[in-house]
Image (tube, rainbow, N blue to C red; front, side, top):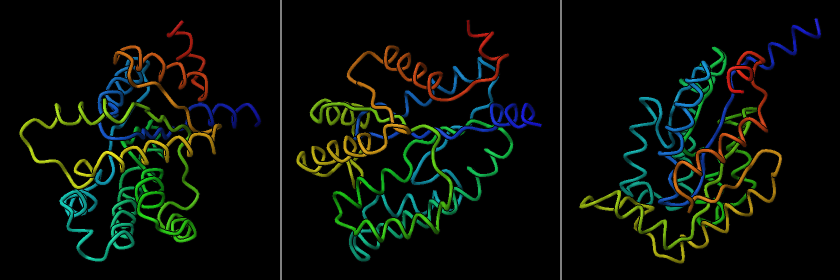
Length: 230
């Protein structure tokens, strides 16, 4: 019975979230990790927040367009994020994990703590209460925080965006982004068992290697998978 339980734990789905400031390279690194997992015969689903499910994608447009702030400031924006997350978790994340898939998510609840908590001044008690309602006992198995100096991140984001207008968060001033970086560093320091900070200034392939090393170090892979990787 113990051996069966251990095997089930090793082969169950895993939930990995990616966090970081603008231009940190989250989208690129999620795709590279998904490719590595698929090569190791581990089913991976790539998703994002806000969004990731039909209802949440509608709310994403409201949030990134800046309309959310017009409704009632940081508190209203936080509730919109919560509504999107609730739909995303119940429609996609929980079912995928139950099937044994690895879920790779571009932003999750740490983004709310950084953006609306540290920078939007929403009370931590309010955020905790909202989390209990929207995600309950769901916590990422591993959170990758991609760290990059603000000036480099902003330059990368502008190059990626091209002629398109910046979204609500990209349009914030440099001091906002500096505070955001510090907020993520505090999150990483507070939960070292869950969070791994990666130097995202490095070439993308080196960043990907560091992430893969963190995944193999923190999350148990099946014996079959480990044999294929060695």
